[in-house]
Length: 214
Ligand code: T5A
Image 1 (cartoon, rainbow, N blue to C red):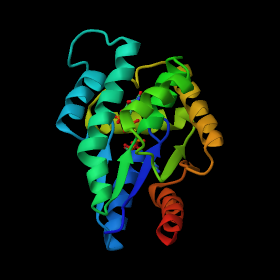
Image 2: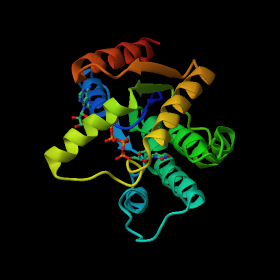
Image 3: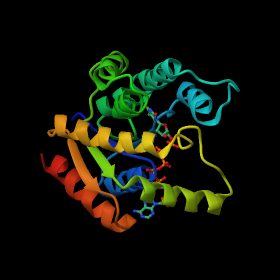
Image 4: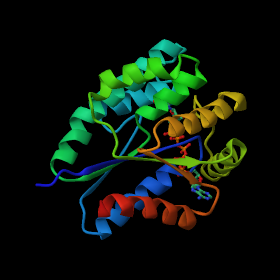
């Protein structure tokens, strides 16, 4: 059986990662491929429990920055072994809504631990399961937060723990992603996420088709 592929979506808040990851899974299935959607943090029972702590303050105590790094890594280690690797080995295309680069950037740059230190922790967690393609949905920070505000007012919800960080934190995150994409041009594609969902989907599909043909 031919090996599947592993595609990740990354980027700052509100860039449309979830929307595009779901659309890509549907499109791959229409192309006759088996496709699996997953997200971080989460995607397994252990990971979803960790997500509750990280996103929604389920432990009801402040999460230290060092703890945060290790919880994201723990969620990822579980996801790789329970979901991503088995699916790829069975020939599926795995589409992940965030992956290791989120830690490299949010904790490495946003929290200030340094990208290289986070790359080391990620290497332990993922053990060689590196994406074939990473689509960076790049969007101005204010534009992303406007989208989130619209969603929150529609759904009657509020910002989660990371969204409550200062705009300066999120601006550093955006710059960190662009820096990472410059470091790894073979894996990353930077896509302009400011257009509507259909326009962004076309950009995504153009990149994925290249992998399909390759
Ligand atoms: N994190 C995560 C770390 O700090 N370290 C890590 O290692 C990891 C894995 C995850 C948080 O955790 C942090 C990063 C995050 O802060 P999350 O809830 O999963 O939290 O948040 P995000 O991944 O950032 O997802 P968001 O929901 O905030 O944004 P998305 O997925 O980029 O956007 P999406 O698709 O949900 O769309 C947001 C809104 O915009 C609309 C959608 O309908 C929706 O209402 N929209 C568009 N509107 C106009 N034009 C478009 N093209 C649109 N696309 C979507």
